[in-house]
Image 1 (cartoon, rainbow, N blue to C red):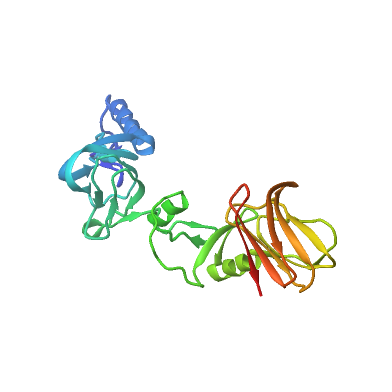
Image 2: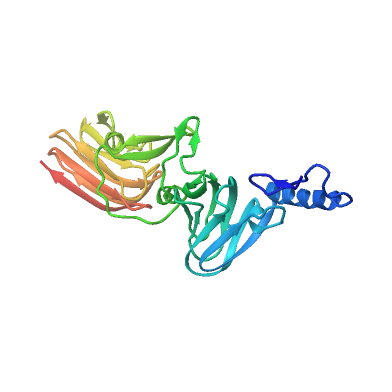
Length: 298
């Protein structure tokens, strides 16, 4: 009885009573085929636009490798035909060829692997209608399918490509919530930023020199009254960052006040004076001091 071969790797099954005195050679060859099928890495040299990846019965062949490292100098997208079309195959692919490699086995679906990319593909061995599937397409974690495109993943990985797409209230923004990544609407962020844009302090009655200190990195609105005479309000830069501002709102129409724009208690600007009218004093912080101060009388 003549030898037969396994369906997918072409391993020789010696017929009963065959190969007397030579079965060891065949067995060793079979072990080499198995070794290649389990962990073999094959360098596949591509040229032109087509290549046939063949697995031959009883022979060490390039189609028998588990890992395919594509190289060579193809002239364009290279179509790699997995042969024969009735063998099930699973390959790890690393495409270093400089061109896209498209794997096909029959008239069914194909898989294209861009140059510089890696893939895990499965050929179903269905004969003339055989299809090749990208096993990482539809990857799921915890039952949730990953649907990100390569562009989206690149952006999350620090990509610098930026467009001019308008932001709408319902758009999602990804944020780190105590170590858990969540998606929150732009409207929710807008509400948060608006609520925290300005620290509105409780009204203050000034009698003698007082200091207004921001409690966080935020602009400050401080309403106050001057109880008598002429008093001094100092504004500390503590916690402020460039571009933030401080509004001192003198709400009384009596007495007067001087605002000293300060830096941790050291006066850096003699400030501005607010007279007996209700008046606002506005200062814009430049990172080290207040580069712009103004008053608004009403």
